[in-house]
Length: 257
Image 1: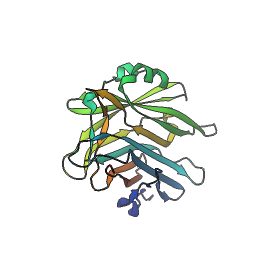
Image 2: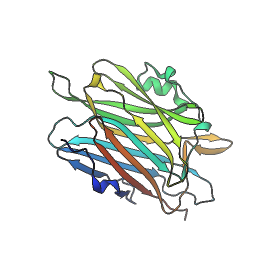
Image 3: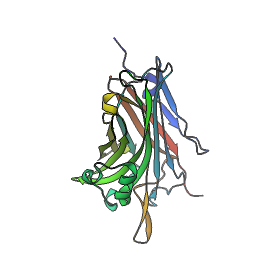
Image 4: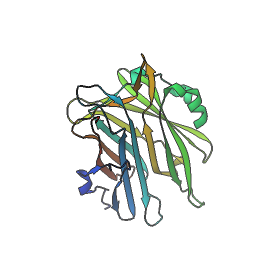
């Protein structure tokens, strides 16, 4: 029986993002398979408790690979829970619908829904079709503020594949507000099927956070303040074969000097 990809040390692992501006990855391995994850928040200088919030951007990078060149397991879900000292201002942002994004290339989507664009990134997929040598497919990622479902905000993730034929990939990403505890929001990304089922994601890189003017001041899609010297993100990656990789990542913050 194959042992699920559960790294005991990673269950409670905490990664502190370096103070020099670089994000250091925490990596786990089982056999030839490895998974690495990073998360960081910018800027580091933020207001303290009771002094409001300031706009931030959240960078996350998940990489999957193998040491022997074999095809890695297929990434199914990325789940993030975000520090309670951060807030989401989706109501203050224009929205874009799935219907408006259907059939668009990355550049068309960003032009069509420019005001609702709140994040960008890159996805890479290892494609292993039968009778053909494996190859890598890359797509820009775009994240748009979508229409809320009731009181729950939603993002719409946009990607574009070229094999076996050009195709727009859209994913609705619900954002759930949490009460109590360390974390304030839960974000779950369920990956679509890539390359007619022959694609395994090897990179999911996203930078979420945008600003706009409202009432004479700058507001952010994500805002935060600093308490306890850090902002924290807990993430987990789940694969279609049952493998599971959890990790807690912290990014330092400090008060204005």
